[in-house]
Amino acid sequence: MKEKILLAISDVVLTNIIADKLRLEGYKIYIAIDGNDALTKMKTLSPNLVLIDIVLSGRNGYEVLQEKSFDRLITKIPVIIISNSGMALNMRLIPSTPTIKDYLIKTHIDPDEVMEKISKAFGRKYIKHIDNVSDEQTIKANGKKILWVEDDKLLSTILSKKFEGAHYRLHKVDDGESAFKYLETEVPDLIILDIILPKMNGLDVLQKMRSNEKLRKVPVIMLSNANKQSDIEKANLLGVERFMLKAAVSLDEIMSVVDSLVK
Image (cartoon, rainbow, N blue to C red):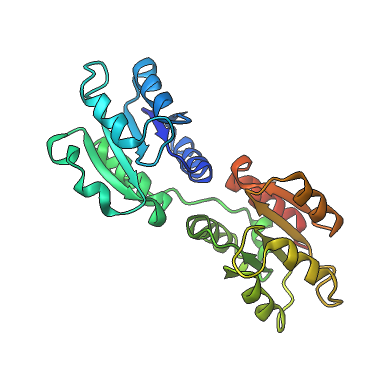
């Protein structure tokens, strides 16, 4: 078994993506729900590495690192910082704290970059894992068109690689109006919709689709963190094939549902 890694990240989707990737590589993963929980788990679990977000509830990342530096039980645990900007580089802790091994900018995180930095922190070279796509899946996916309407750049980057690796033809837009510009000339085999979108929300996009004879029968997956019961009920009434919460599904589950719906 490889090392124990504690993830203290405010973004649930990002946490799940990184955790899935690390488990595939054999690491033992623990998740902290806030800054206080991160400190508690550092003391009780003695992880070999901590990935910590600057933006945390309870205690923020700065406060956690400050308290960690004065606690002899956990002060030597190495850390990789996750920040919303390059501000982490200017933290007064970093120049004087050798246990801070590296940093990641949240809006530009790539799973392979995470793995490279973690491997480097452990003194190893990362060998990129290549997803195995079965011949059956390749035949099924090859040439199938997916329209994905999503404004989350991180999720877009990661899942785009999954779709392309499985030989889907993916068209990605980040708002509802752009989706309909594409749909004026193309009829995809599947549409993936977020609810919270600029200009036109996902439910409005879905309703407009269902009133269009050409688009009415295109299968739709609603993939969102908006989990109001009224939204779920409206999506179901409009004939969505699946309603999936980003925070509750893995990348492989998303891919599995997509594979089951393409014809």
